[in-house]
Length: 172
Picture 1 (cartoon, helix red, strand yellow):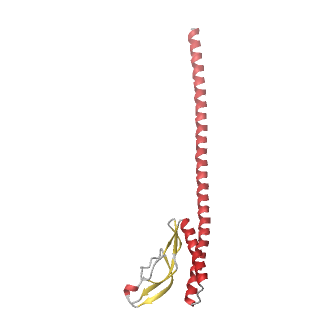
Picture 2 (cartoon, helix red, strand yellow; picture 1 turned 90 degrees about the vertical axis):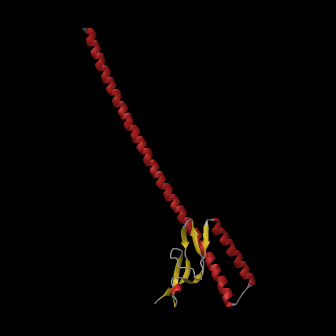
Picture 3 (cartoon, one colour; picture 1 turned 135 degrees about the vertical axis):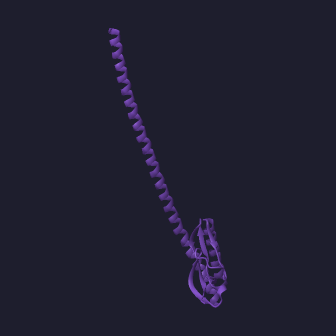
């Protein structure tokens, strides 16, 4: 009978030890889950910071490119004014032309697409900005470009600057 009692005591001890072991394993599993959740949270934070960094970088790069675009457009306007006035200084035209070519290369090297449109093209509000509306007498001239004032600029699918145009409006 003492063997039976001893066996039962040993079984009880073994069951208690197994329960303690299971409790420790559960606690370790909970701790591992918390650690994994922490890694997920840290990963989400890192991804958010990376996205914010990319957005800030893109915004700064856009401002940088817009400076070159304004400079290029101003130089093109100066060349047009010189030609219209008849006061043509060939050396100045050559110099401005060289600067315009350099700015064009800088913009293109940075992924900027310089696009144009022409008189009689259909007006597209996604690509063109109407500076004025011109009344036309024929229906087929309505919603058509009458005059173009410069170029448009697109960068990685984003319109940086639309083409300034005058648009024909037809009234019955």
